[in-house]
Image (cartoon, rainbow, N blue to C red; front, side, top):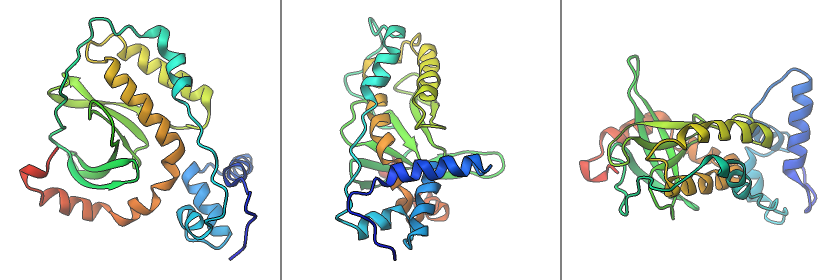
Length: 232
């Protein structure tokens, strides 16, 4: 394996590589590019690279919370919005495990061809229990429709080009402008959403090992064998 300098800015190198690949006509996700760069250095993936190089300087955490709040504040008015002091758990989710700052659940999407089983990440110290992130679909989900207490379907926030703040600003702002008119989109939901987006912005490249540990066949088995008491 190659030995890298202690002060290497891995993510900056990754951005440069991703840009060069794009100019050559190869579009690649940020996570895949991080793993590709790690493998070129002789490591299994980015998480393995970090684990075997404890002296590598961690890139400082970048907060986008204030940015998101500022860009959408003028479209939101939480006066007289629906608020529930005690938010019930989401019945269709099955608790799986915890990972750093997150609780991880198994979700099931019913499909006419084949049901899909996938992971949902939720911050441990969230208030509403309604805002989750799916690495598989790269989306944030709000389980709030038609009511907070009885969510038949969820709203999605896609995070394509998540590193591009201008793209993030417009896509996030457009959805918020729509949701801001809904009674269920209150201050609690909004705060949980921007908190989760803030953490995922920095952590989304670190879920590879978890995803490999739980392939869909395992998720299906655990989900279908769960008792009613294990559903959230």
